Image (tube, rainbow, N blue to C red; front, side, top):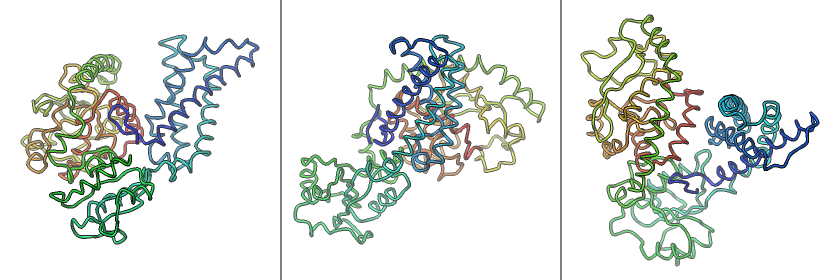
Length: 462
């Protein structure tokens, strides 16, 4: 994987994305030239139209990211990729039409765009047919050696067998640090020179998965391995990179203290984030005010109670604020104000409320909280004080999720299906901690784009 603005991207995905962008530029140029010859117009130098070509390529690639064209399923299945590419091209047409209306001259002509769309789809599908086996095969997988043969090593084995895994394990070394549950692991005592062993197997990375690290770290071995140019990683950092979350079962306070993240350099990121929140929330409220008003009237007609729902939630640094949403549950959803976990097919949700939740329209009024600075567009989901106090008793590091502003959408929402239990909250906390530790404008942009996928295919919405 390669790290881009603190976020890890698989080499195969990065290569595919760059090739896609080049093909989109080529398709845009082909559409322009084809239409020019069709109407007998002279083809001017390429420099005269680089802005429309770039706007076409950027728009379609953003749509591809948004609908999951670079996700595991799309990389493994040509049929899945074809369906998502069709959706992304359709979204690209819509976005380019809006862009053409608001910024004339920035896009291709409509006739050019039509041909360019067709060329794009054919080229992108052809690329995936040609490179499909290589991208999903062993060519881009890192070769890994695991130091350990216990339950921690077994966790890495499970990850390696997962569909779309970016690494393969070429060897296990039992370090005599606990019970051996991986039978094929080679005992450390049977290896004369561990560094030579790693080099002979062609490994590019060694992961330390010891069960007991106290007085058991093979420092001399690790030093020799490191000096051969092979990357050495601890289990917590490895799992963070491979899963996109902070693994609560393996981390300790020292890992948070000494690992990368929570840096002071993100002050500029915070300023950029706030400026975006102000501009985007103001624009969203202005554009969706009629939709919010109409939805509020329908909610009021459909069931008894106020159209808007206000509730106290925990925000930045544990401070409480009032969240506002379109009401999607019955007025008596909570008895005596006691917080209650949402349930699958929750009977408290009204008919209109189910529709609003499916399209996420009930979230629109939260843009007011974003404009006031109590929330951000991207961040951990704000929870009730009662839930927070309860979860802090069960989970370490839960308070650290409040080191960033809560958000309307977030890293958890696009990666983990909606859940409403202590165990679900634990998994969601792992994603929240990853975001709080690594957030940048680049990660925010990825989350905002992929939120569209969650809206279009609302798995787990409650």
